[in-house]
Amino acid sequence: MEESKLLLAELYTAYFNRAPDAAGLAYWVGELEGGVMNFDQIASNWANEQPEFTDTYGEDVDSDALITQVYANVLGREPDVDGAAYWSAELSN
Image 1 (tube, rainbow, N blue to C red):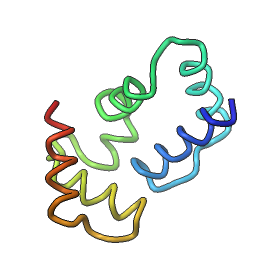
Image 2 (image 1 turned 120 degrees about the vertical axis):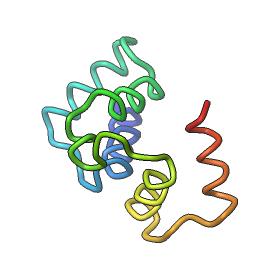
Image 3 (image 1 turned 180 degrees about the horizontal axis):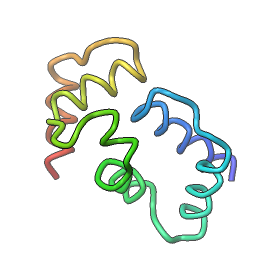
Image 4 (image 1 turned 60 degrees about the horizontal axis):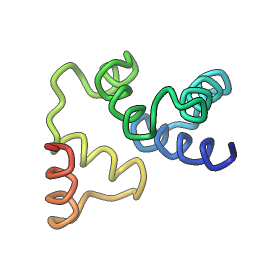
């Protein structure tokens, strides 16, 4: 359970630049550990179905803008060329 909490807390930071709220974290840990969704499915759900994502990034966020913001949220810097290219390819898959 602790590993699930840590992974999801990191996703909250990456996507929303904040710590998870207790109720939200408990819900998503339940989804993950209950086998309802795997981690990639949760990340995709947040990007495609969660209002906070749309509120944060807008309706039609492009992959370059998302990559730049996630780098800023997690690493405190802009992406390097190779990193941006890698994540752009990952988002395309």
